[in-house]
Structure formats: C-alpha cells, structure tokens
Length: 83
View (cartoon, rainbow, N blue to C red):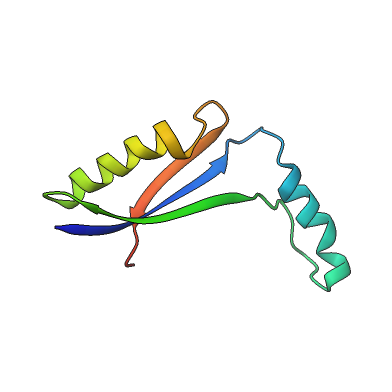
C-alpha cells in the first residue's frame, strides 16, 4: 500500500531560532500584533510504500532522523499526510 506522510522538523526547545526571531520582529510592521514565540521549521511530504501504516511511519521516522533532520538540535515528527 501507498501511504502519504508528512515529516515536520523543528529546532529543539532551548536552541536559538534566528529565523523565527526575525519573523517575530517583522510582524508588528506588517500589522500583526499579539503573535509571540515564533519558531521556524521545515515540512517534507512524500509517499511511502509499505505493508501497513505502522511500517510506513517507522520507515519515515528512520528517514527523518538519518537524513531530513539533525537529531542533535532538531526534533522530527511523522504524521499521515491525507488528514
């Protein structure tokens, strides 16, 4: 079966996020107030062929931790992409 999956990669808590800080500083000038604690990240979408959903998620998790993220400073989470 083919499973559409999404991997979200974000910086771990406590790791400086200069991209998020830059976005947060720019928001008031763009007319957005009341927004704080902005954190930036990356999202990857792809299909995985596997016998079941659990196997697809396990494979995507391994891919995320070995290729798509730096596990020292980033967290990666996997979810179904069709939801």
